[in-house]
Each structure stands twice: as C-alpha cells, then as structure tokens.
Length: 360
Image (tube, rainbow, N blue to C red; front, side):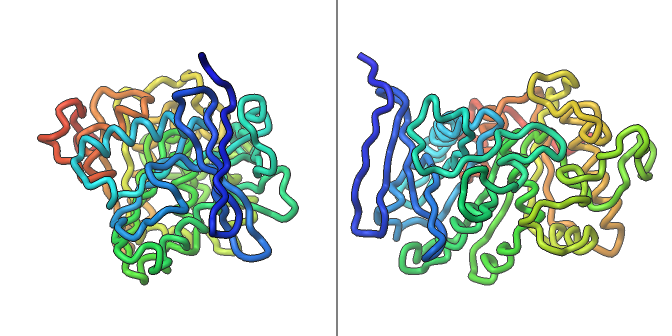
C-alpha cells in the first residue's frame, strides 16, 4: 500500500530539527536542514547520502548536484548516487547533496510549512530560483544563491569537516543556469580556496548564459545585438543590466576577470540541438545567444575567449558529450561527467558515453 506524505521529524541536539519527507513509500526522502546565522536562520531542503546532522568528519569530497526546472532533486540525487556507487569511492568520504528549491505549486505534493518558496522561473528577467532572486514568502530578502553560500561556509567548519579537500558544484539545464550565475556572482569562492579547498563548477546544457558586455556572436565575430529587435537582450539573466540584488555593485568587466579565474567546466550534449525543445528558453534574449543549447554553449565559449584575449587567463575545460540530448543522467554519467564528479575512471564506466573536445 502506498502511503502519501510520510513525514518524519528527528529532534536533534543541534539547534532546530531535521525533517525527512517522502511523497510515497519507497521514494527518496528529503532532509529539512537549517542554514544561515543566528537571528537569520531558515530551513532548506536537500537530498543526501548522509544525515546533515550526523558525523561528517571522514568526508573528503562534497558533490552538490542541482536539479532543473522540474525542481526534482530526487531524480538528480538518484542518478548521482548510482555514479557514486560505480566509482568505488568510500561512501563515508563523499557527501553527495542534491539541493531542492520549492515553488508555491509544490505545496500540493509536499508538506512545506515554513519553507522558503521561490518563483518557479521562466525565461528572461522573470524572477525565479535559478537566477538568484529572493524568496516570495520570506520576512527578509533571501536570495536563492544564499543557501549555496551557507552550505559552502558550513563546509569550512574544520570541526565538522576536518578532512574535506574538494567541493564540486554541478547543475544541468535550469540547474546549469543557477550554477553558472552563482559561479559568476558569488563572493565566497576565493574564501573557500584560501581555506585550502578545491572548488569547481560543472555547468551542463543551460538554456542561456550571463554575458558581461552587450556583444553577442553573430556567426563571424562579436557585435552589439539589435536592441530594437530585442530590447531586453542584455538584461539579467542574459546580461548585466538590472542585476539581481545578490550581485552587489561589480561591473561586467570586474565580474568577468573574477569569473575567468574560477575553475569552471562546461558540458555540452551534441544532440541538445532542438530549438523548439519543450523546456528551452525561447525568448529573444536567449535566441540572441543561439538557436539551441549546443549552439548557445559553443557561442559562449567563443565569447569568453574573445573577452579574455591575450591578457586574461581562462581557467576552463569544455567537453562535448557525443550524441546526448537534454538528459542529465547521461550527461553526468558520461566518461567526462562521471570523472569530473566522482573521479570515476573511464574503464569502470562502461555505460558512460564518450566525450570530445569542442569541434569548432
């Protein structure tokens, strides 16, 4: 018999409580954890292979995997957990977390009392969880980027994570969008690296990218786009006009210099080439970046190289995942994806599709 909305709360010695919920028996539970600082604590949802309140002193690597527009962290967690098991890594040394953002419509299938809720997000400058906008229902401004900041800060606690060496932040589709924009806009990356942790970002098949100038690739080079045809093409999330509150006051040039130094890998599915895909951003600001996700990704890599020129060193890797479309499990399970996430060697990943260097 299926049991809907099983809800278990474990009262802990730490402040607050941890809650785990599943939608039906056998489904993966999510943990309700507490983030923030005294006076500004808030709950947040994660799927994980370990209890957040448990003993994490043996953890050497943290992998964060972000869901797409469906806000289905359970699916992303399940796929990543299989890769982790196949890698042969000691599960006690790897903390796998799939954060889950909730929107008001998710209250129909989850017990979300007291949880922050974000707009489900569309395209363009519409506020949403995958662009860093603030929660809809919170008493103070709470950016969807804030949980990432607070998780990273928690990982720097040497008492809880004395052996931690490596942190990977990965996202596909809408998750790729939040990871990309967070990698550009956060001000904590350098603090994590100064603390001796290797922090990297993996961005897979997002619908659009954040540009630092008004230039776009036109097939031959870079030039300002036709604002008469698309007045909002350079507004955030596509560009730096009207930036989200979290972004602070850095201009595009400063943001690019900082982002260029961060450890970023782009994964592009060579079959993610449908301009009418059901979930691709079809607004003109996104179309200004290319017709489909593969083209937009290739154009953005060209754009970064154009901005960097000979003066700025790019800390980048790019892989094209051969014959894979908009499929997070196959992207992250590819020979390059699984190696980047969990160090899974190619010879142990028989099901992983091959990758190649960009073909342009």
